[in-house]
Image (cartoon, rainbow, N blue to C red; front, top):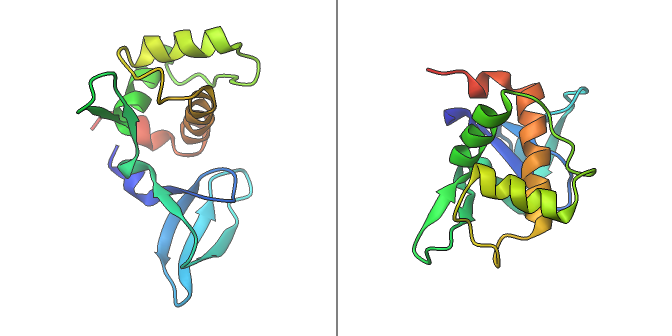
Amino acid sequence: MELLKEIANFSGKSGLYRILKPGRGGVIVESLDGKREKSMIGASARVSVLKDISIFMADDDKAAPLSTVFENVHSKYQGQTLDAKSMSDYQLVDFMNDVLPGYDTEKVYLSDIRKLITWYNILVVQVPELFEQP
């Protein structure tokens, strides 16, 4: 899961991006989709590197790293893509309880769970080496 430090989400842009290298006015990234387009993201953009994202746990002092959640999803679904749009609210909550028991249901919104599933789908298709065992 070390590759997560190279993958980011930018506010105002959908999808995930691989960070290639810093440039003069920002950072050069490659989109993680079928097109693999390279572009420059300005220095003022809000960047969320996946390695630094955590999920709130019901225990106030704890948070689960996103890498742990992705590993749990991958071990449960064996690399299958999931359809978050067709899942009901109850199915999303059940999904999250299966992959991360004890998550904070008040701080983790349904939209966060949908985003987590969307990101997992992108990673399993575009960066399958992320889930290979070392």
